[in-house]
Image (cartoon, rainbow, N blue to C red):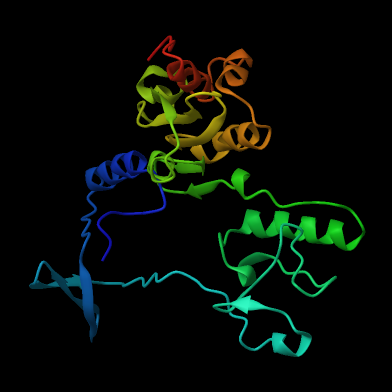
Length: 260
């Protein structure tokens, strides 16, 4: 019964995605409880409740998405003395458990359950098992949603920065000012950069629009290298590309956007 879609994404990103979905004929019901689902032969009757009012939605198919959780109960970890919390195996930034030289990666450790995260964690665990000193940096973990238009986010969004009391600046560039985006999807979407008000370091980046899930890597790299807004501005971005919008958002953070 959540108040909006995709709660872990920036609210402004989700608003653009919702608008696109509605435009394509999708009815979105938020803050709505599914009471029951009845099999009616060729159809399913979904009984819902919102604000105390009951209703029925008829559907050909019902997709139930309740999220995921670690499934480690059958591993008998206690026999090896491995610690866990709510079935998630506890690890440090070397991906090592509390038992020396036993490592765990991926969905079994909880947290962000994404394939690219598990892959990197596997590399780190392997390197440490071979005597290297590799560490996992959660800050550079991008989240991607393959809607149309695509959404992607890395690092801090405004809501998280406010919650932690961080003073930040926002640089936002509307893709209606980017030629390649206009060609690809009519210029729908934007790039947003969150930077620290004093140091100007990049804290986060959010993108909705064409190639968002590819472009977010620049934000992850900036965060991992502790780069600042000026570092992105000084980097020449090819034209015409959607990637130019990232530089424009950095310029906007400094009040210098050219096409915004």
